[in-house]
Amino acid sequence: MNDVSSLRVLLSAGLVLAASFASSSLLAADEAPASEAGPGVALDHPAAVLDRYARDAHETRITNAWWSVGGGAALVTSGLITVSGDHESWGHFVWIAGGVSILGGLVQLFLPSDLEQLESA
Image (cartoon, rainbow, N blue to C red; front, top):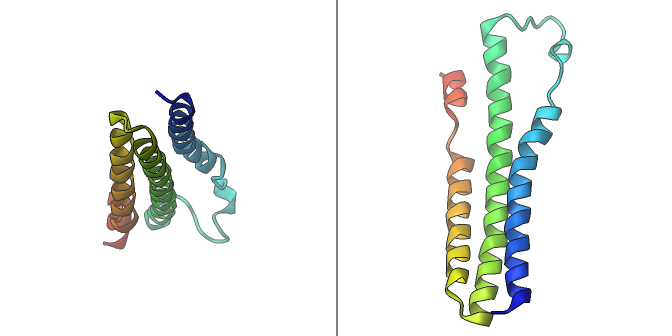
C-alpha cells in the first residue's frame, strides 16, 4: 500500500468535510441584523419575513450545491489517481462517492427548496 496515495486521499476527504461544515457557520455569521432589512420594511409582515427566509434559503442552497460539486470533483480526482497508481479497491469507492456528491450537488443546484417554492407560490 502506498502511504503517499493514502495520505492524499485522506487529506482530500478531510478538506471536503471541513469545507462542508465551515460553509454553514460562515453563512450563519454573515446574517444581517433586523435593522438592516431596509427602510419601511417591517419584519413582522409575513410577506417580508417569507421573502427574507426564502432569499437566505436560496443562497444557502446554491452555496451548498457548489461545495458539494467541488468536493465531489476533488474526491473523483483523488480516487482516480489512487486507482490508476495502486490498483486498490478502496480507490473505486472514493471516486464513486465523489461522483454521487457531484450528482447530488447538481440536483441541489437546479431544484428549489420548499421555502423557495412556498415564496414563489
